[in-house]
Amino acid sequence: MRRGLGVMTVLAFAAILVAGCEPADTNAAPDAAPALDGVEYGLVIHGGAGTITRDDMTDEREAAYHAALQAALEAGYQVLEDGGTAVDAVIAAVVVMEDDSLFNAGRGAVFTSEGTNELDAAIMDGTDLQTGAVAGVRRIRNPIKLARLVMDESPHVLFAGEGAETFGRQFDVEEVDDDWFFTEHRWEALQRAQEQEGTSSNWRQEEDRMIGTVGAVARDQAGNLAAATSTGGMTNKRFGRVGDVPIVGAGTYASNRSCAISGTGHGEYFIRNVVSREICARMEHRGETLEEAAHAVVLEQLVDHGGSGGVIGIDRDGLITMTMNTPGMYRGHYLAGEEPFTAIYEDEGDGR
Ligand code: ASP
Image: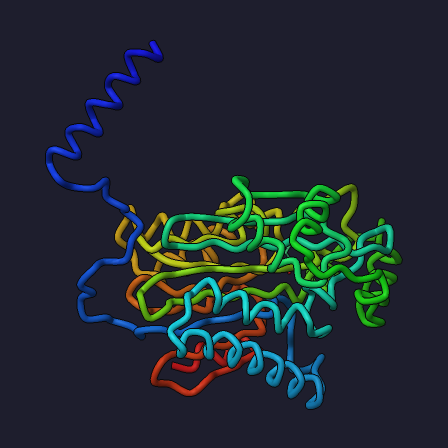
């Protein structure tokens, strides 16, 4: 059986050589790009979705979020403007947000039921579907950098817990003490969640548990797409719970055939609905636009199942989406030929 297959493989390669052609890379961006409907290059970011309302905000907090989003956009856009890759751009943007305690990722990660921090992250390159992800890491300052090493330096896709950290040590990935992740507002959120345990949960309490995951999607000057997402997960999570973020196709997905998506919201629903891949698949198989696909999945499918959250996306034609079924999502975009845009509340739209 093996021998027969071997002969067939040799014959197949011989046929390819005789024909003088190479196997097609079906994910590669088209050589001669047709006129674009959207932008040549740019990025879209989010800093989490949930019940974010003007009543709960102060002017200072609003300004702080806008400034943090702006800083992440500038870091990612600089890479793209200099001719860098979509992968480098999304990493640059996410690292800025991981280092800002406003967001539930890296430094500002929420607490588990044990009072620890367990972080998840993923990166995907739409050029060749290469992916790297980490789950439940406790000592890594920037989990998205570790996810990138999984993609670039290992034959695997997802490393979890201690093993992920052992892998990172081989590459001198920066490790930090528990103190790095301590923030008063996240600690108080854990106390509230634990006090409410056993009482009937409502929308507001659920939302309190997860706001602030970060993500970025980009299209570079070569037309390649990438997506990256990083999170502390959900407040009071237990028993090694892993959310949608490091599950390829759930919270993070990118393919040059269709689009790059990063999600934020109640992870269990994003996993069950395979949200990110579902949006790209609808584009590929049903010919839907990015906006149509994102609306169908986030505003209909997820809502029908009771899942709250949102997504950001950019597609192979440079069109974007920022779609949420929650009152707010920290978000922004910086697209070639345009000024950067940041927004918080759902009714602010996408600024275009
Ligand atoms: N999706 C994340 C999780 O469930 C949380 C969030 O996006 O806010 O881990």
